[in-house]
Image 1 (cartoon, rainbow over the protein chains, first blue to last red):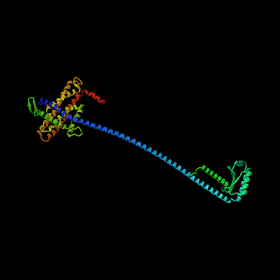
Image 2 (image 1 turned 90 degrees about the horizontal axis):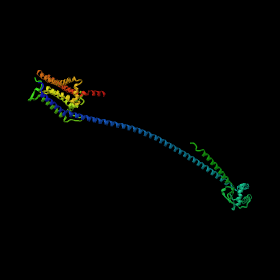
Image 3 (image 1 turned 30 degrees about the vertical axis):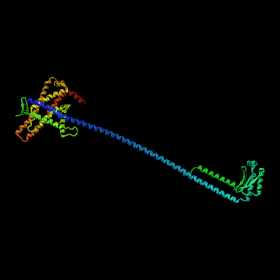
Length: 264
Length: 233
């Protein structure tokens, strides 16, 4: 008999026991280990993915910041360049203005110096000329000249007319002090008398006449009374000439000022 | 002539007997259980693992993959039964290289027992998966007339399973035995190697057929919805 019932039953039992044993000792532990490993690998991969994502994110952020930084740097550099240009222009302009101002001032100073020197020279020349003239005339002055001078004075007195004469006459009448006649040299009595007579005749008064000597007159005669004066002297001529020359020089200066600074 | 290790009886007490089939089965059970226990005692859950663990993992994942390919969507549920079928038959064939060893699968009692287990397991998993009503309905599909044919089919395929395995294993052992008497050099070794290959193929065929029967029983009423779902995807 090929088939044995007991053996069949025993083998069925044996097989079921083996199924239980294999489940217990083989499939469960192995499958569990595999599942645990798969889970771990999945976790590691997920972690790696997350890290990769984070890294990519950080890279993106970094790149963005880098670009932003470059942009800001370029902007700052451009601004700084513009500022420097503007500052340079400003400084150059200031320097130019300062140079111009200095140049103008210098020109002004030079012109003033030149003007002062001109004035000084002209003044000195004038003084020298007049000093020489005075000296020459003083040297030439003498009695004959005095005579002639007194004659001229008397004639002038007699020729007085109008307002001048009226003013002098009224001054003589109101004055209580003597009338003073100044000369450069002492007059001889004859000429003193002639002068006194001419005064009395001209103004029709009996006023006392006092004669004084004044070397400043160079050569001449002068009648003063109460602020009024009748005179003839070389000093007067010289003073008149000096006045004329000064006026001429002032006029010339005015003309130069109006013309302005000469171009360089 | 001895056709089955059932005939080697070590001890007998009436109906109860201890023959070579049972003893070698116990031996195989001991080797498989203790070997598994020893290897799985220090299982590594990390990326580094021992060679033995690697071998076991390859075997287990291989079986799991095969079950899944047959069409069982939850291989971990069936791996205990189908995997043990394969490992037992494969181990019984592999051990034929040991002198004096008689494969328990060379006994018709053993193959019949295994076929009986499959015969019971098919409706068991079928009913568990789709309920007793739906499972029984599968016998009258497509028409009621098919009921006797379906029942005959169930029985005949179980018988075929048992006879196929027994025939192959018994013939293998018998051929080697005959050849040893005719030509005791070299040729028996080649035949033993061929017998190893045949044994592995038989183990694969047996467990795959069992898987197919279980898959057919558990998927009968689910074919259409799953098919539709696949089309939608």
